[in-house]
Length: 288
Image (tube, rainbow, N blue to C red; front, side, top):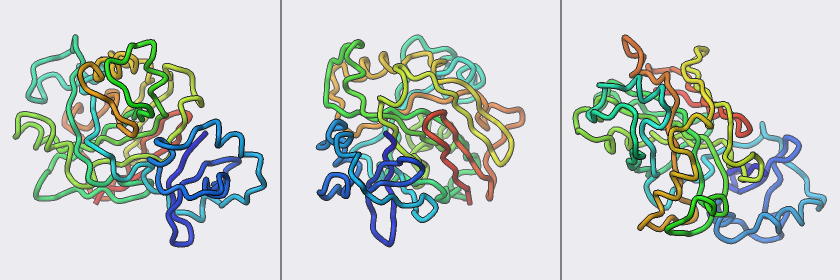
C-alpha cells in the first residue's frame, strides 16, 4: 500500500495509489482523514484493505500536487551518520569527527519546520552556505510507540518507509564542530513522494538506492549495505528513549556525496536532484 499526501482542486487530502490513480482515503472509509498522522495514529491497514473493493473513482496522478507525506514532523528527525562503509571512508578527515568506520551508531538530529515535497525548490541559502550537498536516504516511519524494543519486535513498531534527501550545508557542519545546524536549514528536508507500508517489501528491506544530479549518477547502493541495520537502529534508539508514532529515522547515505569528490561537487543553482529507492519511487527537486 502506497500512501500519498496531495492537493487536488485546492483541497489537501490523503490517499492511496492504486492502478496509477489516487484513491482518497476519506471516500474509502467514509470519514475525514486529516493528515498522514491520522492514518498512522488511528487507522488500521486491515480496515483500509477491507474497504478497498468499494467503487471509488480515482484521481489521475498528473492532476494533483504531491506534498511531503509528513509535512510537519512531530519532532526532529533521527539521523544516522556514516552508516554505509564506502561513505564512511569517503568522508574520512572531511568533517570534525575522527571516526572512520563506526563501531557504534552515530546519531544526530535534523530539525524540520516543514518538509518539502516532490518538485519543490530547495533553497540554497546563498550567503549562509556555499557548500550545499545532497544525501539520498531510506527513511523509516515509526508506527507504534515503544521503548526498550527488542530486535525481534522492531518490525511491529514500523509503519513504513519513504525517501529523504538529507540536504546538508557542509561548511556549517565544519564551522560549528557538529552537524545539527548544517542539516537543519529551512527546506533542507525533501521527503516522499509516498510512504510505502512495511508490508510492501521484505524485512529488512533490500532495496536499490540511487541519487542523480542532473543526468549524472552520483550515489548507488543497496539498503542491505547498512553497517547498522534497521533492527539495530530502532532497538538501540529505543533504549531509554520512547519512540513515537510518526517518528522519522534516516538510516544513512551511500557513497558519492558531493563532499566526497576531489574536488568536491557541491550543488549549484538549477541543479536537479533525483533520489530513487526501489519500490518507493523517485523524489525530484531543484535547487535555487
